[in-house]
View 1 (cartoon, one colour):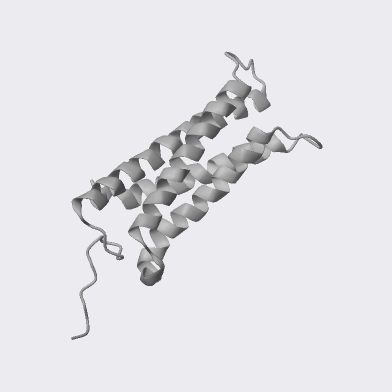
View 2 (cartoon, rainbow, N blue to C red):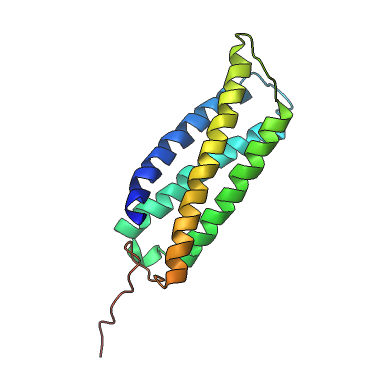
Length: 151
């Protein structure tokens, strides 16, 4: 199942950019007093892009800076962020019908992509937790321990 992770990370990056655009659009009409949930969802999108950069690029180019336990903790924190933000966004602006209102439709799309991102980050966290518990606690991208070079 770990071989699907890079594909899922690419899809997650695309969804995070879409969520960033949607929440930016939702924030745009507010001059003063933007609802805090919109700011939090904007933060979640940017945070997710940074987390994906760490999870994907660091093992490839800066393997000494990658640590499996740190990546696992960051993934579970991101799962909690997306779950909390999506639930709050859904409860804050839940409507059954938008009747052609673009702002309302964007709000509902932001809710949907928020839950998609939550599901994808939950997938990453579960897959990496299982690999970590199996004993693949190394610092490399493949999860294999780095061999000892000196004697």
